[in-house]
Amino acid sequence: MSGRGVPTSKEFTVPDATNPLSVRARAGSTAQRVAGGVMISVGSLTLPAAYYLLMVALCSGDCSGASQAERDSADSAREAILPVLFGGMATAAVGVALFLAGGTTLDVHSGEQARTPHGRVGRGFELTPTGFVF
Image (cartoon, rainbow, N blue to C red; front, side, top):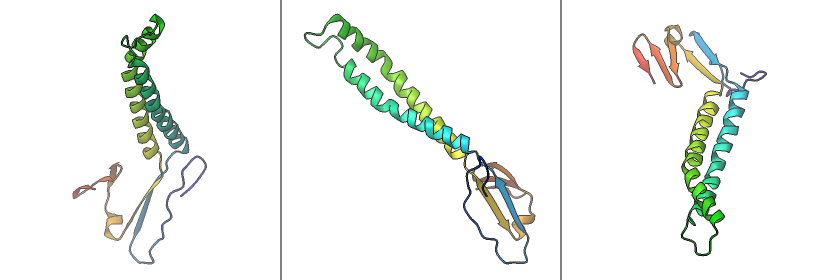
């Protein structure tokens, strides 16, 4: 499956059989995958930024010969480390979720399973008359 703004799915072959076949497509979003990739990149860049802030913060008042401006910079860096680090981690995590959710998936069922009504609850989970299927 492919199309404008839809990531291409994996190829599949239709078995030569007399049994019914059910193919359900969930079209993903190329824009969602690109946004996820950008968020992963931006979130990942906060790690070196937090490391730099840590190096600056280590000189908070203990460095001999440090000027008041340098001490103030160290104090500001110390206050910014955790928000930068956790903000970047959250951004990267949301990016991963967007990237994974933006993919195109195909559910191919043949035989008796094609006739059985089932609803997709989430990625890899289906609700069937017999219960949840993973």
